[in-house]
Image (cartoon, rainbow, N blue to C red; front, side, top):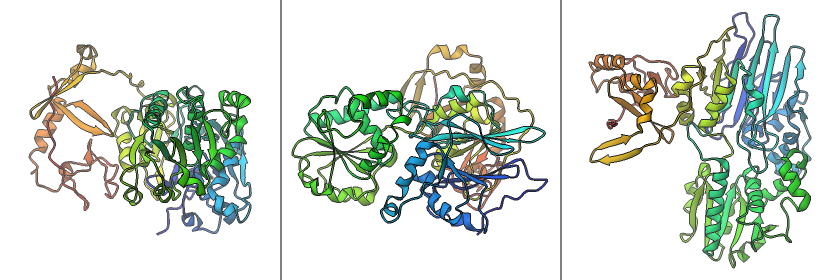
Length: 550
């Protein structure tokens, strides 16, 4: 089946988005945006670009690559081969790293440098009435957010695409700066939601937790194996081990396998693009490879695997390489540390020796739900499109009342055209105050009591929250959200109760939340539904447990 075409007509809105891939799983991210007469392809992480080749002409007027990770860039080489004259843009660091997506091909034929570089923060005119501006997005060296501005005689239309972003500073990348974007008020914001509404501890706390896990394992005479993505997280952990006080000067070997080691070499060429603190570090000692300063950092040849484990060591391997085969030959005691987002697949986990210890850790490279909503509230867009996350995580974000009440929210599926009508004026209520109340939970038999401090009643919102003395509880990612039930809702529920509980209707459907359908397989997906509504993919809602609060 062909994808919808972006065609110009007098009835077409000024802004339209056609997703070819939204990063739900392994499909990659690839979004075709139409601004007036121009078509802009935002990233091309498709494993197969055939959907972009349905027409003889190029699928876009220009392509933007947000960063060099495969799920955003792996289709670019094929796209360039098919349309050599199609301009592809990115930051200078991204252009340097792109070849890492095609290392096997590079061994046969050199990969041409086809990505044209753009400067930071300086507007660049792609066409007379279309300009772009790049802002560092954190996440990875060279990762960029793109602000597009399309100008007409009536007004200017703006779209901000974050790519993958991270607000916090990591060891090798400075985070996205809210100051540079605050109050920009784009008409459309396309933002990733990799972690949904989950909240993470601060970055330095996560680093401390990981270092403590490794330190504890080494102290107990375990060696540590870290399967990591070769680009980004591998270098972050290696730099962390090189500079963290718990490991500085320790008589310890850190081994690195390809392609993680190959990416480290590329980072050495990016030194001017790395944070000033990293450049200062590199003036006094090598950034990665060093067999003189402790801890020693060395490349690991596959032939040397059997020698590992005699004394505690740390080994960084590519998570996609056949390292489980090498692990079977290891001697000594080992701990395998796996990122939480990359939990072991049963195919290789079941093949590991039973005496290996397996642990997980969190060292996020993407912003959590708190920072995602913080970004949205700071830049104040009209439309928000959530991409790059599981359907459940993205649905959690679109169901947040603090966002629903202020913005037009979209959670598109591949192949679904999203029209983005823009009003001349869009008056928004003030951003919500971020106030948190800590309390205690007690389980007494079948009842759960949640005790909160008395200060919570001093806000005007308490009267409406506690109007009936009843609450609704629901899971939102890993968080449990409490919401007061109003008198109006009680009356509505009383009327709805007349519907039989066994009736196959939206009221009794598993995917109905907040009067909306959240089943991607349903024709009602994303729409408000009536309690008595019905669709062919109805699923029965399980019985819920009551929660009471004191």
